[in-house]
Length: 339
Image (cartoon, rainbow, N blue to C red; front, side, top):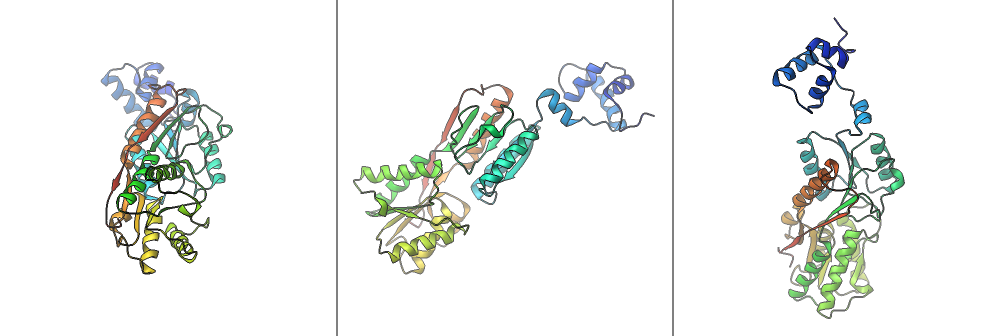
């Protein structure tokens, strides 16, 4: 008997009584062949333990049925939900995924992109922690779909994000409608495109109501690796020690907002009577915190769906990769007890 580990497509064809071309069509499930032929070929394959050389096949067809997913923090609920939904979508369609967690490190992100390129992935879905995806990291022109962050690279790229500007505008408008006349925004020093847009939307709301925006309106967290809750608490303590006065806080994510609420309450400030707080994301923590958090809800499932569909369209040629696509997913204000 032929060694089952060495059997070739030609030998499978001889044992099945069909042509090599027919065996290839059955293996790739592509082209015309009868159900009887399919069963004969698969029976021989099963009996002899034949498996395709996926690396050689990828090189030959320039397709690997694999995709790379770059994520800055897999422990973040927003990111992990998106990754889970995308992975499920492509698994159902016969794709494997490489999920790479960068810990917000540019060095790790660059290394992962090079590694994924070497693995011949068909494309990248990137939730980047940086403002630019370096084209020099890739040796091939492959589709790239970016989620939530706008990189400077524009070629062969699609972009899916929430309407962050409108979210910031909703947050500012809501605080003002609730009676705030000295609202501030709490954010991080290194501003990604998503956070920058939230800030600009907040500024627009203040401008429409003739409320001044200056350096006193922005509270910045430090750049340590501490959790967002602790960063927010420290920022509020510093603002209080400096004598800053504010009656509303828009924090650019929910964990920062929870830290704001905790620090205010523990320092004797009543929420929402004296200071109102709005977060961003609508993570699970927003609903179940001690004082349920008013926040801007991102439609995470629609973001994942839009990203998956446009990525598949680019892979299959239904959309031209030379055309840039930019989709903004609507957000909504969820009012709870902190306002």
